[in-house]
Length: 237
Ligand code: PXP
Image 1 (cartoon, rainbow, N blue to C red):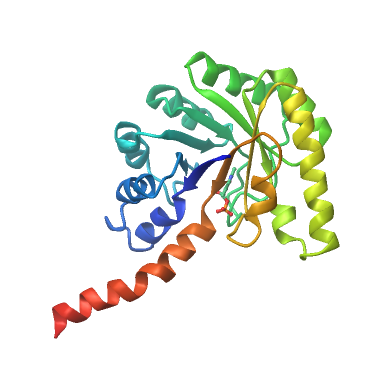
Image 2 (image 1 turned 45 degrees about the horizontal axis):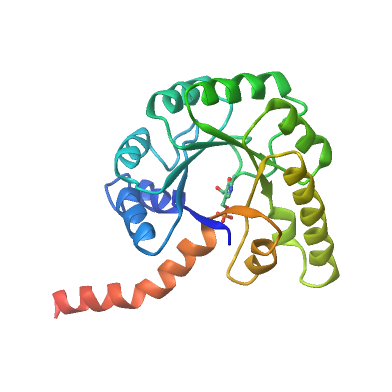
């Protein structure tokens, strides 16, 4: 059974919409842990559009499960990661104009940079995962760099129409997953996973960790909104 990492960036996105102090991702992380989360995932972006340095620092002290920091190969964020020491760092590509992480990291094309950042993180005692598209060349680079895990980008699978298209994306993930295991790295997956499409990915042999954000936060709004309105209604009547 894979571990479930909950990406709480969207909670910080709502907070930053007003640049106020609620909702607090620290509180959200505690609730996620109460719900059974095996890990808390946050992305400290270079532009600090949602998660802030303060969130990472407090979460490091409060999260009892695995703390997974998504980060670009950025020198400033690398310094912070090496000092704060999350349990795991997942290296992702980052472009300012993107709404979310769009493609996998080009570990092959940026091999030297990725090697340097991954090495620094591992020297600091942080386990390193690379967020990669399901392409053999990228997986082989990850193995050569000696990283601990590969997080397979499930975005294409999630976007594919249910039926033969989705099946073909799933087969691509399954084939590459076997290579990741063969090369001795832990198998993670994430991006675009929902209550409807998660099952076949969770069932891939030796799937170790799934990271899910959007769908769970979206559902949390829907299952929590009625209660929140009732509480306010009670106050004003
Ligand atoms: N894994 C990685 C590396 C990501 O960048 C993201 C999005 O921040 C996720 C998982 C979670 O994706 P989603 O929000 O679509 O569940």
